[in-house]
Length: 273
Image (cartoon, rainbow, N blue to C red; front, side, top):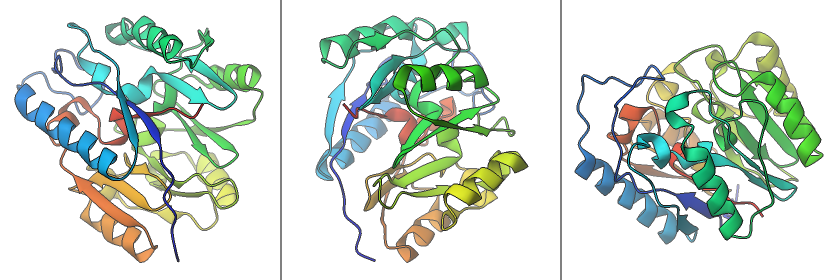
């Protein structure tokens, strides 16, 4: 199948202040020191890769004391129907909220709705064609999905996450192609409860279903543009499955940023307005 890439506008944040100074997901271990220089080099390689694929990358400035701001996917949700800020589940990340909201406003992406419910942005809400797929169970609350539906005027499909390793939807599901006519996704079934798996089977009967080996290296945390899929270099089986499906896998090494529980998709927020 011929696949067509679509240029994306992406927001990133340099990991100058990256550290594992607390533990709020199973990937984090304060006993393992972070090599910030290596994290910066890997992040720069990710940015260069995305730009060479034809995508526009904009950068929000981080701040000392906010080590997870590099994971910009959690900073909000920017859609054609409106922009919604983040409300983080953990106090350690709450300081990021106003910085992302201010950046959205300066970039002309406002007005920004400040959520009442806990809502961790594009980490838990992914656009696949006309579908807004929303995760809950660990961070974003189920009530936040109803709030999003009201604010954006769009139906939201709720999916329950049940494995703490996959605490955000974007760690368990990749939107490979968000073409409204032919959306395509890949997901790891073990991250979801059975009713959610049934929903995914109904919405995407031809989806690429992945395995524990892929999910276990955060392989699902990948960036798809309709043709290319930027993914963890460790997800070799996933890369081959994508080739077989007609996609072009683009592996990157983000092993240092994985210490905080993030991969390529965690490091980008897609700006869809």
